[in-house]
Length: 382
Image (cartoon, rainbow, N blue to C red; front, side):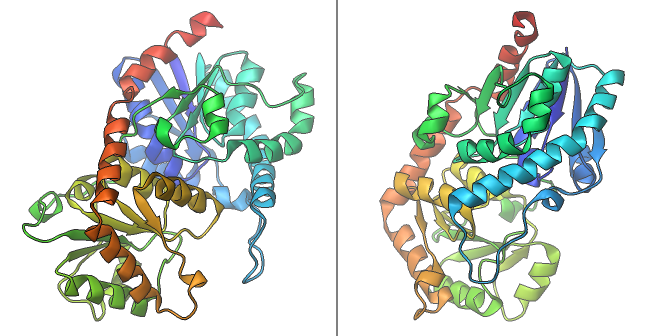
């Protein structure tokens, strides 16, 4: 069987789909991964055939951010995101049709926001699978915006709405699944952490003895805290006897390293490091949050936008995380505020217990190899 995997062009979608792509390839199927130019090096690194179908990054199609201090209505933000993704879909569809003329797929798998996948499958009259790559995806709101933006394309296909997928695969553990997603009766799939690799050193996979390990991620796109606040946070944690790791891109690492002592800082392979940690301090990015969930690590989250706030709310409501919004405490130093939250999580066993329960639930979900066996029968049922 020939399976075309189409992702919207973010590292989140690439990290999430990689285990399913490699499982399909390992099962003996022909696979092709289609993405955009900025993701090509990372996509090639996972070792599957990859083709570039668009030069622009996904942010090229996204609405501009509002003015400083403006907090957009979440529903309006989701709708405008859907409009942007609709434009992306119509832009890339001709290239995908040309690709399919030379490499006709039997099945199309698209990431949750890849509306081109459904359009392509409808044009080719082949089944397609929607793959939700992380938790708390607000599909309903984004779908409404996408349907508005895709109305001419849908009418050209004789459709009155977005094409329904033949299968919906979801990596969100059922305990955290939003009602709208649960109603769609998705096929659950175990989340397998995937990130770029490097040569491991023993401290990366060895838990320290006699003291907690706290991982702080600086964020690739969102800087959670200014440098001085990070230093105060590190000092507060070190004062409690914790070992501190900071995962950061090299430019951010150079900026933060000044004034920090006895802290390991730089790019870290999260899949190897996470199981050794007692707490992760992050902005709630999907790949990081899902990796920590799979490894049973409680989290302190500082979400900057609608999607990360949904993730933070789901995890905090479950009891596996605590959400801290420094902007809501203008009289407090952000570093001290976060340090207090960390102390609370480390001193309260319930956070770690809930995080481990969530990891156990995720580990019990069908593996990517199991899901591939379900994919194999879809063309026969079409």
